[in-house]
Length: 448
Image 1 (cartoon, rainbow, N blue to C red):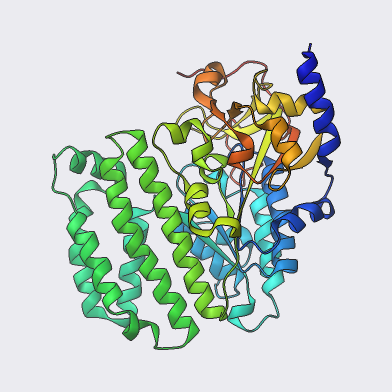
Image 2: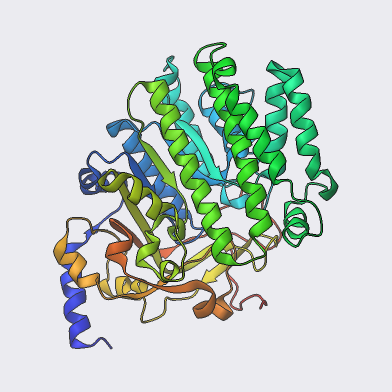
């Protein structure tokens, strides 16, 4: 039973939020976004169908109505670049699913799912017939887990245009060979001085590549500029990934901050590159988890010394950055029980009573948009910090409070919030035995 104060809050919120049923209902959101150049669209889990679907609906409108030129996602740079080539009409892949084939690392379902396939096909169709490179919208990755794949991409690029430079790159990157493409093994050994660090080699390769910018990038116009940028970002990724894996065993804060700093640097480099191609400031949509996109300063994370992509983007671009969070009360989710475990379709427990998700459930509107920027009445009603749920690629319902909740101040964290009271698990392209589309288990899987 709700207290009188909470009943009053719920009644007021019910009048202030707007129900949504399809992409046409996002008019007020696009109006509030205005001239923002960076629109960051979150998700409360990495395995929820509605979050992917609605991000795609909003993104399509941003591309069509506001001239956004890229989608940058929480995915590895070389894996996403294959998708970019497909949507640009520059690859041999016959279908969207084929272009997603480089997403082989856990969790494959995060990008190899039916919702992403639908969006990638739409993006290719949108680009079809636009002959000028600057008129097409691209698909890019921001993350840094692809240490070995990025090294291979740098060498392949140099093999084509400068074989002698490729030989030097192979020699430098051979420093990593003893770890059989196991990035964590390298990080553990180098981090605890059990093996030499490859930091100087990674830095030297990036420096040499950047010294050749003018020579490499001017060879064949925009195509050469794109290919050089792809290679340069891979070399930059190798440098940052080497540091990330070397520090990941020292503590969560340092590795988290390195990762989100890398995503911020990649986003800034992408904006500069696309701006150069288009001859005007680029506009980019970002897809990533709420924990990366909601301003960390408004959360428990920030008080513990962590920053994130949302905070850094706000600091760099002020009102030109617009942060949108997503939430759910209950339903199902695709997640694993342990790292590198199989994809499972799990039941999401109803949210804890002291959470924002429970408050949104009590409003009684199945799916709605709450605008927070320049909305003082709504902001005042949500200002009191509450718990907020975050489900990543692992979901452990049996330790839910400890594993999946943190305190946050929502109006300071996001500029808008989109809530779906009941949500469904995203459908992986690669179905495993534990993912059953017609069944939801009544018992939770075992785990720590």
